[in-house]
Image (cartoon, rainbow, N blue to C red; front, side):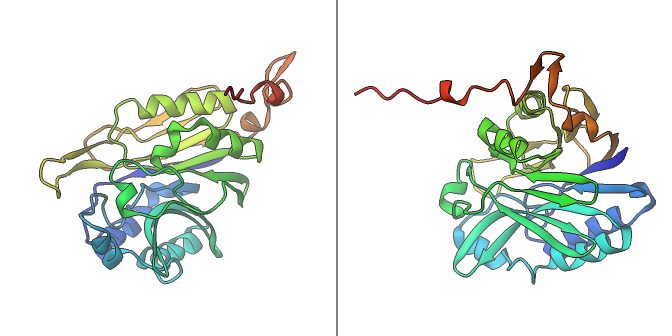
Length: 271
């Protein structure tokens, strides 16, 4: 059995050092004892509602030199855990909404959000990293970010690549998102961990964003093993058996991947 967790948060916009310090205190505590993988929200260190690309550029950081990476690497090493978290990443002149996987030895992998949501189109550059599965101790981990849940291809590609668990840093505002991730777990027979935030941001007049919380850990058969509320920051921990994600049999005669018929899925183009 492997202990996995989410940490639901309520960040203060723009207060990177404070948000990271608060997270370090939460993770470096007895509450996370024995946890091997923890998932934090999308853009946990900056907040979400940027007013302009210039504002992101001021707050975004190069991956290896970022405050979050430096601080959380220390926690990962001390606690012998893996941490997935979202950040605003600067790479030269490009700005990405990114998810980072850290381990006791440092940065393991990075994923840049492929499917941008709403105003993100004018703020971030589209992600340019492939959907990859990484080794994280006893787990095989895939990453997606928030709105990627709308596109079933994301979870399917990660599952086909061998993911045991899909980690989803998120800033969810649509109320049906958590239910959709239950479906993603079922249709791919994988565990999923969604780490969302709570609170409201209205830094743009007339565009209030209320974040729904409801962070969760879901099993390959769709059971919600742990779910947070919608108001407060919260740590959620569950024990998982990775064998459940590696057994793709649905019935004695049905196998999730062997029963696929890709030749039937090709789109017919009619002039």
